[in-house]
Structure formats: C-alpha cells, structure tokens
Length: 136
Image (cartoon, rainbow, N blue to C red):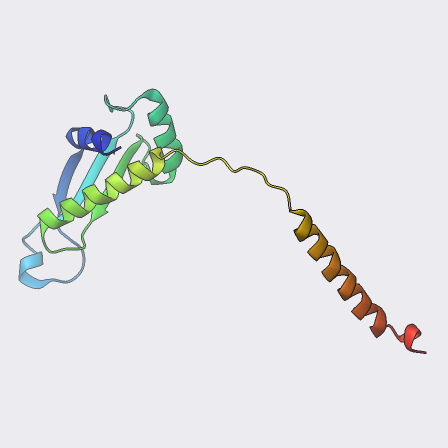
C-alpha cells in the first residue's frame, strides 16, 4: 500500500496561500497555508477499479472535476503544513483502498437461546404476579 502512495506523490500538486485568522506582521506576508490537490481520473498509477473505489469512498470530499483537495493551515510553517497534508492524503487513500472484511452471519448458541427464554419466562412470571385480577 505504501508503494502506491509513494508513486502517487508525483501526481500531487500543491498551492500555498495566506492562512486565515489573526497573526500580525508575520501572517500578513507569509503563505503558510497549503492546499494539496489530487486528480483521481488523471492518475496513471491507479487502476480503473481503484479509481472507482476511491471515487465512491471519497465522493463527499471531491469537487465537480473529481479532484481531492486537502487544506492545512495548522502550523506556522509551510513545510510542516505540507507534511501534514500528505499524511492526511495517504491515510485517506489507504483507508479507502483497504479491503473491507465481509461480515459472516452467525446464529445464537443453544446456551444463549436457553438463557433468553429463561429470562423471558422470569419477566413473564413477575408481570403475571403484578396483575390485579390474580391478587383477588
């Protein structure tokens, strides 16, 4: 999985801009916010099946052109923000491409069935004793 992400590094593009919020003199002249862009459809490394899986898994995070955008402005350092953006990207891709385990349907055990019926019987008896017509 890591090899795919290392290969995808070449297909990423970055832009920088000024971070939002206060910051004074430094923030007004430094572009520390980093935006990472990845075009799923234009990827030469991913197979068509992988592209479909990524599109389905990340469709809420994609724009109209099927481009994934990750914006980071956590740090005052542009380099650190770029590193954070790439980590987020790699986590998203790994999670989306990871094979999902299929659920195996199971049946309750005999002991579980017996216990459930026993507790039902006890509740029934308690409620039966509460009835007014039984008390008279």
